[in-house]
Length: 118
Image 1 (cartoon, helix red, strand yellow):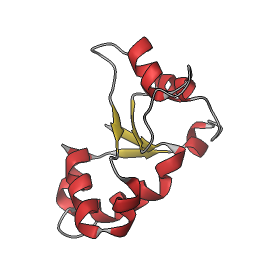
Image 2 (cartoon, rainbow, N blue to C red):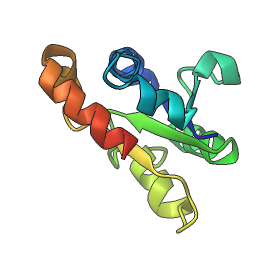
Image 3 (spheres, rainbow, N blue to C red):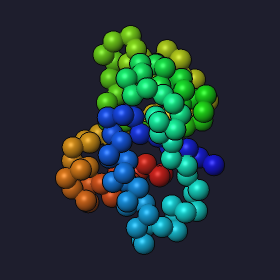
Image 4 (cartoon, rainbow, N blue to C red):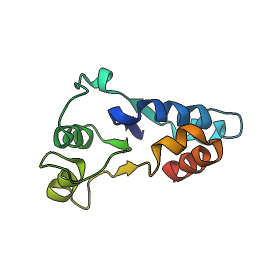
């Protein structure tokens, strides 16, 4: 069963995407995927955890992480973690290109929803 989790900075964004995925036109696909939604709380991960530790926890728990902030700012950033520890067998980190737009525009949110499920 695939697992997905929002980085702390896009938890509300994932809720918007879940609303789309559970809508009547998406429900069959979403239900068929049997995707499990994880959270910081459920995994007992503090919201201020270093990105490298979050990436490692997601890899260990087989969770695809969705974020809106993937940069190489500092030695504990997601991009550094991916480049330093990632292999061809690592699960991806999916980045929402424009998180603010996702919250404002339904059409954009639906495109992001489709791309994430692909």
